[in-house]
Image (cartoon, rainbow, N blue to C red; front, side, top):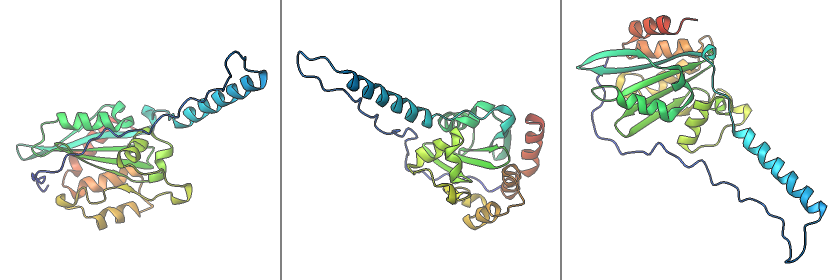
Length: 221
């Protein structure tokens, strides 16, 4: 496995503003006048619409039986290390990044998440430098961690017809021997589920046997 690049990187802030909240709508009432029933009804309808909009932004966390695995890889004293991470990290990018920063990697760590054999996320952390890749941008409409990736990158969720288009940095593993061309080739292989795609990527960065062992032992199907 090629050593991680130890060059310094420009710091990126993971915390991204989720957007300004809509200003609350108010019924205009002249001094001394009471709002009529129509105004009150309209106000209630607006409140209902706001509640509906809030509900549209809420995504259910992936359940354990929907998570294929959550795995971290890094090098310690020059030796590759692979370990299982908690299921909860499959639902929140910020917590994933925080956990990867805690690992004793010589030059950072990489996190791998696979969901329902259809979607994967790769997160690479080197100090304050964070790179992410989502295998299918349209998954940001369905899974919390995928939505987090879109928010972090500051991009809109693609339309349904753009399904299977990746989102993020296709070059995040280039220094480890996996080029953008290699990743595109893996993503275009429709015979592979997202879990098998990540295993193929693990093979290319020379941690395949360790990766499979952890995936099978810690996340039995």
